[in-house]
Length: 430
Ligand SMILES: Cc1cc2nc3c(=O)[nH]c(=O)nc-3n(C[C@H](O)[C@H](O)[C@H](O)COP(=O)(O)OP(=O)(O)OC[C@H]3O[C@@H](n4cnc5c(N)ncnc54)[C@H](O)[C@@H]3O)c2cc1C
Image (cartoon, rainbow, N blue to C red; front, side, top):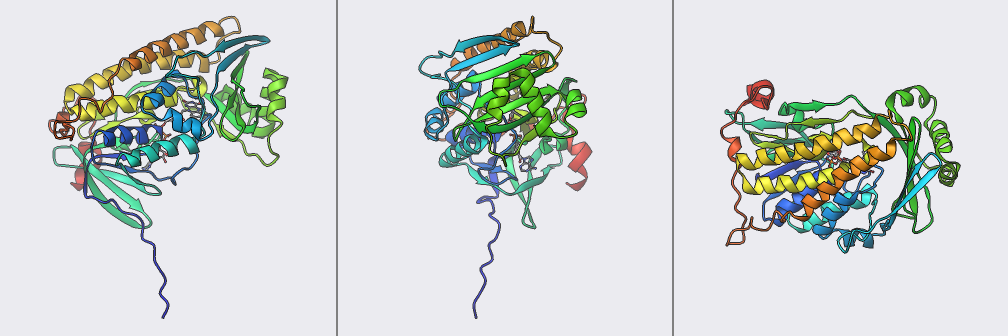
């Protein structure tokens, strides 16, 4: 009698890992890559499929490209057909300021890979380094021990549920972070400014650069990405989005692009007739506490800034490296230092980003606001250039890194409002 093969959902190869990471995009896959290269046993769980797309306008700024270059990923991304961007042009009303990008051998230009390319490349390289990935599976909960230290995750997928333990659980799970919620990660800063971004793709000539457009109350961009396409974005304050985009994204976006530049609107008009638009209504920036007993946050889970300055992926990659360094060190001090350093940069990025995303500028002062943002990025790049890779010095003589479970995890201190996963959420079930 013929039998029907039943395909079971993939399960973790081990019952315990040095680190479990929730979320496999730029923050999670990068952290996995760095920890796996240092020899740690890492499991990454992602609820979306391998190679799937996500909301993004793709533009990488200097810090992100530098990180990818330091990690050996820039060449594979360019080989995957991601065009090299050698100029960036600011359009302030009718004025144009073109800036050639000359960053030396580590920065031959900028790139704006589709997330289907960037996130997949990060996953592939992390997997090669030894990290284990489970896609199409969601982390449903965390569990902690009697002292409140997070001990692992509960995974659900295809009807099955199982618990896996780890030295540390890392939330790389984006804005709506389950890890941040379950650990009650304190919100250290919550801003009120937000902008909406509506984008689609249209063919673009080879060799095109980044273009950023500004007129009173509106902005837009043209960002060359893979497959001969440019991502063309209309950006407006969220309140304007709620008023004007309600009745149809396509028409309202085209009106914004027309007002910014008829040439930009003409470029957008070259899109395939069935091309879909993506819309993001906006989320105000925030900074969350980044670690606690047995857990840490990385990327958007810990810090979000409006996409208008195209800096989220730069932040995620920088944050992944600093987290990898803290995990490899394992001391409470290392996590505290990482948080201090992240907050210093994050506050500056948030302030200078909100100064642009708030749309309270005029064409006379927007250039100065961009120069302030650029100065913050310059300092960020300088700091990255001087950083040792987390793998260096982390490996012991036996080739295995000196990894200790973070000391902060066994003696949970409870600063007001900080992590209280044990008390508030999962304590009752332990
Ligand atoms: C409209 C828009 C445009 C942007 N444009 C740019 C740009 O041009 N340049 C730039 O640098 N940045 C840009 N950003 C920001 C950038 O996309 C983010 O900063 C970046 O994606 C953050 O990466 P992350 O890995 O922290 O989180 P995310 O990319 O949000 O990934 C989190 C992942 O976690 C997974 N996940 C969540 N919960 C669970 C769970 N319980 N179990 C399993 N998996 C889970 C999700 O499925 C998701 O894949 C943009 C953002 C938006 C919204």
